[in-house]
Length: 288
Image (cartoon, rainbow, N blue to C red; front, side, top):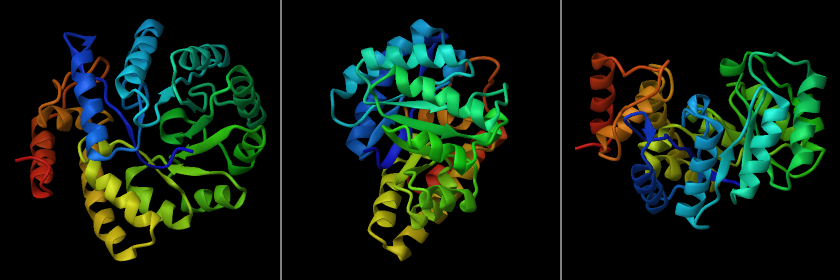
């Protein structure tokens, strides 16, 4: 249902407000560049700093801008089950094609708590869910047996798997769970195991490269996949040299789409790291 190169899109800001004209330009550019799906209000979109009204408006505007050209998977998770349910229902009303819903962070629920959380979200919306497992952000790793239980509820499109574990990816696939890589650098190995694509940070500033990698991996072109994987890994090192999305937004700003502004507690990228990242973008023809 959701496959290939899907971007976890940054949210442009102007004087601490969402810059909707810049967001529209970004959406149009991504579709022209071959991006196969857009995730607004994810971690990369700084949704943790949004009010609910802002989150609803961003999702609604992106749905309108996209106008059915590619799927829109709305970030709508929370560590509060009640809030996650409310956000999912709002995303459905706003016309999203699916929902990205994260494991509850900070709470550290048990496997049964994780199951009951996602069951409540599943029962609250008709939209397909993309589960999101990112232990480095949330402090909890959803194990494959729990994911498989949730998957058995039905209408689970995939899991965005950002554990970084090849073994866990393999286990999920063997249990019949559709996997999207949640780490840019794991896209190639995960797709070789049977994953169907990636929800990507690097695609924010290198959409053609990420699309080409997904296409090559999907058709089994190992030589081209390896070549592109090396580029993506190098770009990802710079994209995560500081907290995401600080570097990604700096890169998008360097391409001329928005200002590099981030919201506190995030702060601008250090100049030396920014210069190194931009040098890497120039090396790969992404920046003149």
